[in-house]
Each structure stands twice: as structure tokens, then as C-alpha cells.
Length: 305
Image 1 (spheres, one colour):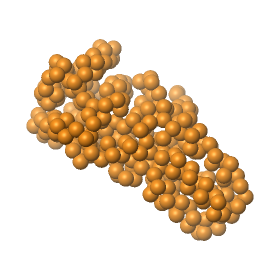
Image 2 (cartoon, one colour):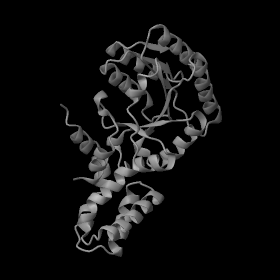
Image 3 (cartoon, helix red, strand yellow):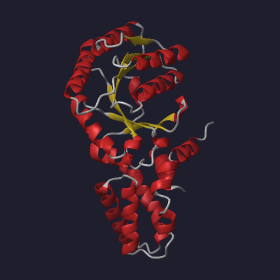
Image 4 (tube, helix red, strand yellow):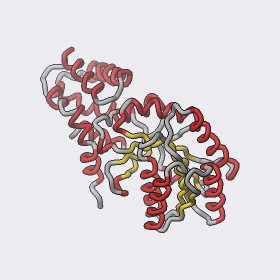
């Protein structure tokens, strides 16, 4: 059995070292005083939790100190962890949703370079390994490399890939993929889309069209719209996610490149500001390093034991 906690601990090493490395020193002091609260606030903000979320945690911890009559700073650690865990939303297992709809259509969105196409391929493998009949739609018609990448994954995993020509109509690819998924009795259809900056109006309108055409091909689809966020971008990811959320009703987040980020604390801002669950996290380059988000393992990984 894989050491899942070990994967989380290793994958969050940069965030832990950059932001939480001083936590043990600060909480190892004997007194709970104003200096401790100031230092703790600095750590939380440095970890990219954001000012509002950091203040919410500190206010709750101050109240806990009074209610529980806590006198030693080191006794705050377990309360801090509990508060951090409570702030995160890992959502329900997507595989549970698959049983109620067939095909279950997932639309993948995000900006250029977020890791969207790679995450699409890794998800396809994960679901295929779980015994599901999976299909991929290569809807990024702007990049020939994206189409080639998914076709290579499809050949390797024996997963069908529906693709159009470079520069073709992404909505047409999505429509054909839904029709093919229906005909082949597919369980899960994952539709990749071109990366686009949230500030490009015409590209966001094209994404609306893709979303609309999928709904015409299958009533109620897409059943899931997941945005892939590059964890290395920190708080900047919030602006991206908000724009996509307003355009196509995003209902889930995949945090890619957590292992490369010192700003993993942005996960708290994602769930608190956007009210979106984090469904998966990328902890490395391998396909198996895309894992179901686990809020307890995440907090243990950034705070340390």
C-alpha cells in the first residue's frame, strides 16, 4: 500500500519550509502574548492564506484560549490544526456521482500553463484504474501538442480520444465526443479545453459556447466543471477562478503543482473566498501523484507533526 501521508508530506515540503518552518519555534515559547499572536499572523499571511482568512483563524484561536483556559503556547498546535482543517472543503468523491449519470461529463478549464491537459490525462488513468470506461475529448484545438499529448496517453492506457484538427471548432469536438460516449456506453467523458486568460473576452465567450453545446448534446451536461489552478501562482489563482466561475459555473478545483509551490496556503483562500471544494491535488510528476484531496493530510503536511 502506498504511503499516502508520506506523499503529502513530501509534496508540501516547499510550503512547509517557506511558511511554517518557524511555527515550532514560536509555539515552543512558554507564554501566549501579543508577540506570539503577531508572529502567528505573519506566518499565516506568508503561507498565502490571505489577510481575511488569517484574521478569522486568529480570532477563533484567541476565543479558544479563553474558553479552554489554555496557558502554554505549544498547546495551541492541535487547535490551530483543527481550525485549518475546518476551513477546507474536499467535497464528495466524484466517483460517487458517476453512478447516477452515464456518461458523466467533466469539463476541464483553466488558464494557459496551469497543468490542465496533464491533469486530464492523469484523471483518465485514475478513473480507468477504478474500473470505469473512460473517454477523453481533446478540446484544446489551439495547441497541436495538447492533442498529441492526450492521444499518446490514450494509446498507452487504451482509452479512446476524440480529437479534431488544430485550429478547429472546440465546440464541435465536444459535441462529437458526447455523441460518441453515448454510443459506446462510456462511464466518464473528460473534455479538455484550451488554456485561456480570464481577461480575454472572446476566448471566454468561446468557452461558454463549448459549455452550451455540451448541454445540447446531453441534457444536464456537463455534470462537472473543474478548474485546474497552478498552486505556484498563490493568491493570483483566486482572480482566475472567479472569472471562470462567472463564465461557466465552476463547481470544483484541482490544485496542480503543489509539490513545486511555496504558496500551498492558497488552498484555504480558494475554499473560503470562492466556496469551491478542492477535489484533487497534484503532488508530483507521475500519474499516481494526482491524488484525492484530503484536508487532514494537507494540514499535517504543511504544519508538520
